[in-house]
Length: 237
Ligand code: SAM
Image (cartoon, rainbow, N blue to C red; front, side, top):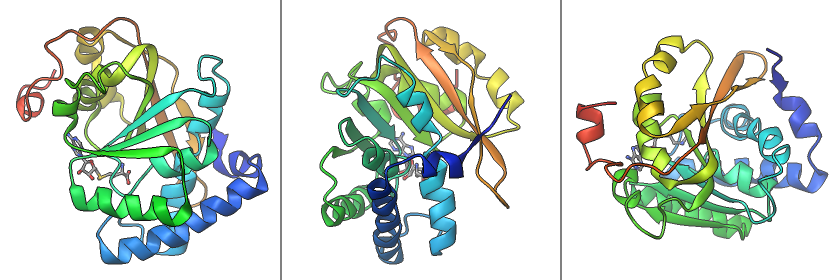
């Protein structure tokens, strides 16, 4: 399967957007020096590992006619704001929500948003297992994203309740995870999800190829999900 080049995706973005992404790197690194948000501490590593790594979702979102200007996106376990912030900068007309259980991370991301005047992001502090039952969030989003939060079968239980029927889940993963994918089959069936072709991308020298797993939600999530905090980890689907 052909891999997208992140450099090509980047060079296809308007110059102003590219500049805004560079500014995000600088502002993020200042916050990262105060609050432990990411292991990517140098400008190069942050640019490649956090900013460019978010971009392969762009062709998927742009090429899908159901994601119009009103599209709503939730990033679960956003941590320091990835992939949330690069995508919010790239799609200024879409509405983004970042969610994480750690308040001090959300405070740091809010400062980054304020400094960069990013107008299309709101943040929610809480656990996905709790907020997935809240009427304000359940089946409310066109796209739910997550990177480096948990293994796929657990993450699907966190993500599925938030997605509208017909919407999509995008999970950032490394390439060789056949076991992780096959062990998430039961979760796919139980949560009414259909796995589509992944987005394969090449992050460049030293980083190599990676993928975004893509799932479509085909029917409403059963009321039993998400289960209370801790249950999904103990009795994984
Ligand atoms: N997505 C970011 C990235 O790729 O840089 C952060 C990844 S960090 C390794 C995982 C984050 O997920 C942490 O900030 C953690 O607090 C959050 N997290 C883990 N489980 C969660 C849950 N059940 N609900 C909300 N946030 C969660």
